[in-house]
Picture 1 (cartoon, rainbow, N blue to C red):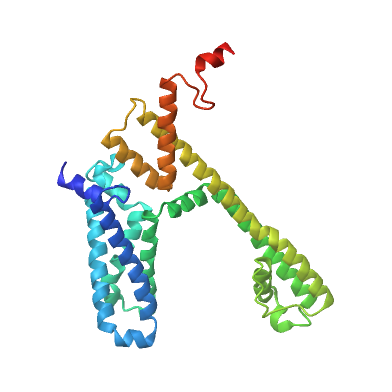
Picture 2: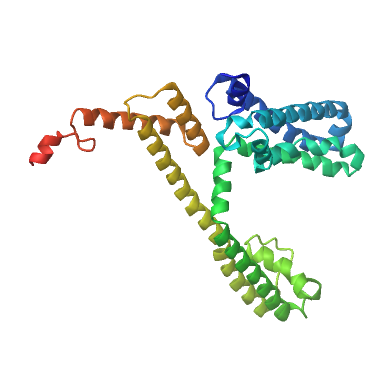
Length: 316
């Protein structure tokens, strides 16, 4: 195995090797520590007391994230999709996760030259939290579900925007003269319409007339259904996507067991697939045991469902 291939396996969070797990945990720990540092640094007392420590930690983080990005760009050609030494690396560099890795350290090399607000630079460091998408399959699954359900989600959002505008217009008509400071114009009334339709209801702006309250009740009830619609779309698609991934894993497992045993390479590939699909390790183990039991019963000419001999069932 070449050194580049070995580094690729170390950086591959789906690899079961101990070094790969250590690398993954170290990067995850650094990401979470960066989030904690950003929050503490926003407190003036902590910022002035630990200013030097925060600066050194930021330099260390930038160096580690830059090294990780360079190594991933170097070893990405080990994947078939990015096999070409030039165009493959370019395609990888334009992927969402590679761009996030780049944004995790690149802007801070130019922070002093730009001379921007320190608060903006500080908040930009939270972009590093997006790197968690590579290490948690559930986040990748949610992103995949959102992409696949984007058209209905967009339609639901547009309907919600239309309802907000209509609700603001209606409240402007019935409450505009009574409360001109809150409902004196449609743009002013949009704040009330938005927090009411989304069922947040801050209570800082409320109708006071009878017709205003009646209209508010109607808008609140309508908002319950509209806010629940995107959640229902995502939940349904999430469940369906997870079931599809389980079925794809089961098919790959059955294919790997055609010869009756799993090679080390097949075990590694199945482990990567289970991590990529976000499957629970216990669920994977049970699935493997079930497939082995079914094959053993078939060899014994026994029905894998009821346990009876197949020739008995045929005779019956």
